[in-house]
Image 1 (cartoon, rainbow, N blue to C red):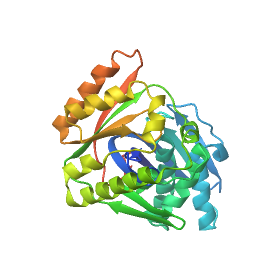
Image 2 (cartoon, helix red, strand yellow):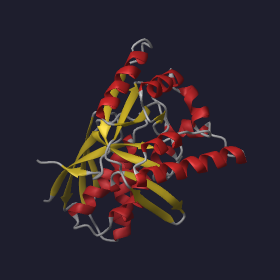
Image 3 (cartoon, rainbow, N blue to C red):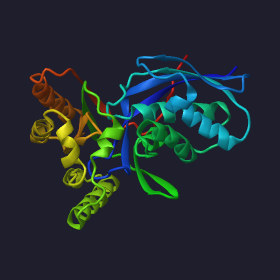
Length: 308
């Protein structure tokens, strides 16, 4: 039997100006998974720790994603999957994406890499479809490709990997409340005023340009969401206070990570990231809500193998 143990990273999606099209990969937060090829010709989830999630493959994002890969391969495959969750469900930092992307990446590796990392994205998206009702790629793409990614098109799927400026460091606060992605999507308006759309397009182009040129001031000016954040921020306690404090402490930008409740900041350098972490910690200590704070560089590799 062939087996592999992997680190499946957390991700930040949307990044303020790029709803459903921008994402980046984190380095210090993620799940661990062990996948083993078997002679059973069945996809089985044999163990889950850290979360109460279904073992049935049709009800688990990892199982659904691997089944999509096997169907495209068109040959019998047996795999046992162990999932050790470190990313809480409903956290807004890509819990379902880590399981989906990690599972397809590991199975592909065990089978000799018949698919490219870009081709794996569509399989992992099927796990996202199960989790949220929408097959979005802004979490699974950075988990699979590493760094920052941009979904230019969903039909056909066209995903680009973007540069990762070396000094960028993310700070994430995760309030211990759950916001389901499906619920967070339900409050989004389906029609957008042209004026707001133009502003958002400008910010998206500016952000991507800032990544290519390592222009931290341009990145900062572009990290602004005039469409989604005003609607979703009401679901997150003390969001506006956290944002105000983070920006005044030196963060380049601050926004909702994915569908929330996690709040992210991008910072120039570890020192600023640590100062921002302390500032937002001071805000949340008075809420009575449990929380976690993470500081992470941008993970340019994505999923990683771990020693046995």
